[in-house]
Image 1: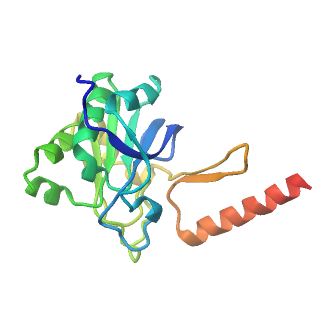
Image 2 (image 1 turned 180 degrees about the vertical axis):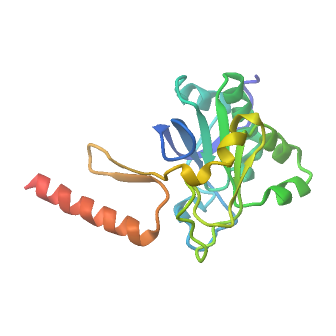
Length: 209
C-alpha cells in the first residue's frame, strides 16, 4: 500500500471498546460532519477544524492485533471516504472487520456514483445508516440512537448478527483519566447521561475529601 495516501482527520480513537459494535473493537471518530443532526451526541465533531491528520498506514499501527475489528464513527466517515477506504482495506487484509456509521442512507451513498464512497462501502462489513432523529430514540437495539437507523451486513461476516440485534445489550463506557478528564462512548439519552455524570461527580468529590 502506498505511503502517500491522503490523511484522515481524526478527532479521537479508543484502542479497545465493547460499546461500539460486535466484540472488542478499535473505535475511530473522524472530525467533520455537514449533516449536523439536531440532538447529535457529538456536535463538537461537526466542524472541519481540529483533529489530527493521520495517514491510513499510521492508523493501522494503532489497531491492536487481537481486537475483532474497527468501528468508524464521527463526525461523518463518508465525508472522508477516500482515506478511510484505504484504512479499512488495510484492516480487512489483517482479517479484522470494519463497521461504519453514517448519517446518509445506503441508497443515497450509492446514488452519488462516487468512487471513494463505493470504495468505503466495499470495505465495510457492517454498515449503520440514517440520520439521528431525536424524536425516534431507539432503546431496543444496541449501538444506534434512533429507530430509523438501519443495519446492513454488506458481507457474510455479520449476516446472522443483524437478525439477532434485539438480544444484544447496549453498553455505555465512561473513562476517567488520571487528570480527572471524563470521556464517554456508547449511546444514552441525554437525561440518562446527565444523571450518570452527576453521580460520578459526587463520587469523585467524596473520594478527594
